[in-house]
Every structure is written in structure tokens, then in C-alpha cells.
Image 1 (cartoon, rainbow, N blue to C red):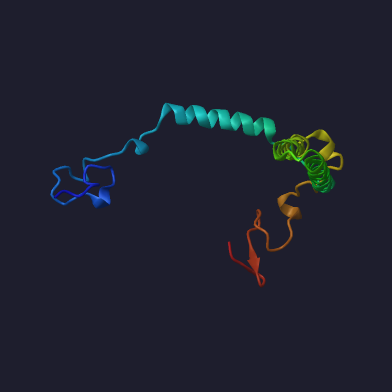
Image 2 (cartoon, one colour):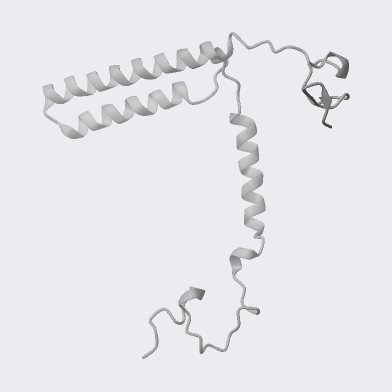
Length: 146
């Protein structure tokens, strides 16, 4: 009796008596797909659109908004659910609150970046502190390593 997975693509469970050798066998997963390149391009465009900056104050504001919106929508859903005794209405109000929270908090809205961080300008090779890779290399205990 032949193994039930003998004809499958699982190479480890293939009986040793098969005539197809591992040297000539290949899978479609190894070949590049034209759809993969298109998907990567679309993903890169979406990343460019959605990649925004949020400062630390914006993160605090997003956290506060998330907590407040979820609490308000949960409390409203609970009160409406108790008053109407309708679990569907309660669920819809709760899910609507979650969706509203996603729309308010997840995109990098400009009001999340009102206090941007001002980084120090890059220093030249002469202004590098000791032990940092630069034009002078790395020094360890006074000895030049690189």
C-alpha cells in the first residue's frame, strides 16, 4: 500500500522508490512572481503615504485619546445594551467606537507632531568623540584599533 502523501509536494514523506530526484525537482515558490513585484510596489507606496512622524507629546495624546474613546464607547454601548436588552445594538456601538478610535489614532495626523524633536547636527570627523568610528578610527585604552 502506498503512503497517502506519496503524491504530494511534501518531499520528506515521499517514498524512496520515486523516480523523480531532488536535483530536478523545483517548486513555484522559488521562482519570482510578477505579482510579488507589483505587491511590493503597492506596499512601498502605502508605506510612503502612511509613514508619518509622531513626537513624544503626540504619543501621549494618542494614548489618552485611545483610552477616552474606548471608555466612552464601551460605557455608551453598555448603557444602551442595558436599556434596550439588545446584544446586537450593544456590539455595533462597541465596534463603532473601536472603528472611530482607529480612525482618530492610527493615521499620523499632523496634530500628533506639534512638538518635533530637534536633533543635534552631525559633526565632522574632527568633532567626533574619542572611541567613535570616524576619520581617526577607533581608540581603545589609548591604542588605535582600526
